[in-house]
Amino acid sequence: MLTIPFERLLPRILNHLIQNETWASERLRPFDGKQTLIRAGGLDIYLVVDSRGFFAAGSPKEPVAVTVNLPADTPAKLLLDKDAVFQAARLSGSIDFAETLAFVFRNLHWDIEADLAAYVGDIPAYRLERLRQKVFSVTRESASKATQNIVEYLTEDSDSLPPPREVAAFIREVDVLRDAVARFEKRLAAL
Image 1 (cartoon, rainbow, N blue to C red):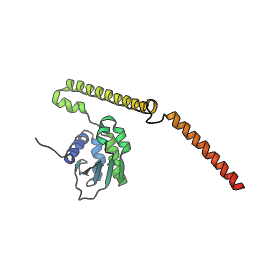
Image 2 (image 1 turned 60 degrees about the vertical axis):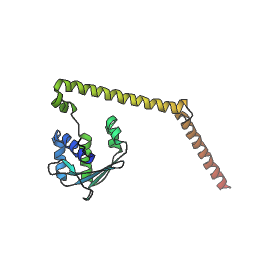
Image 3 (image 1 turned 180 degrees about the horizontal axis):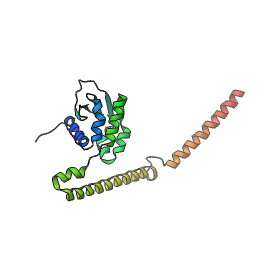
Image 4 (image 1 turned 30 degrees about the vertical axis):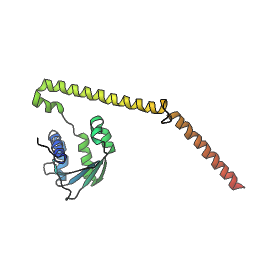
């Protein structure tokens, strides 16, 4: 069995997506030779833009124009909420290159149905894509409801966390106490 390291697989995946989105290669082309470092957890991936506006595997020995720091849970977030990954990403380095990368990564879309159609035909690809969308929708909805239930349990039914209304009441009481102490200090200073 042939295994491909993720560092070589990621450029292939990105290039496949860019190939279907000609605007992306046009936006990347001016950054020919620029390298980016993508850090996710303990994984460092170097990508360099080539003259056609595609990505190639980079090298840690070459200078990095932009560093993209992603949270360790990026793979899970990509499946459930792609926008959360982009909100959590932190870019540093060349402003023009960073803005271009952010725009390209945010707007690349995978036409899964078209890729499937090449292997199984148009109608099965259409049906498989609809099934995938439904499964992801149900999964996302279930995960959201489960999270809400856990939060509700922790705040309402168990003694693990105080309910939000108790936290708000406590904060109001602290504010009242702070104001009373401030008034007392003024009176004490006047004596």
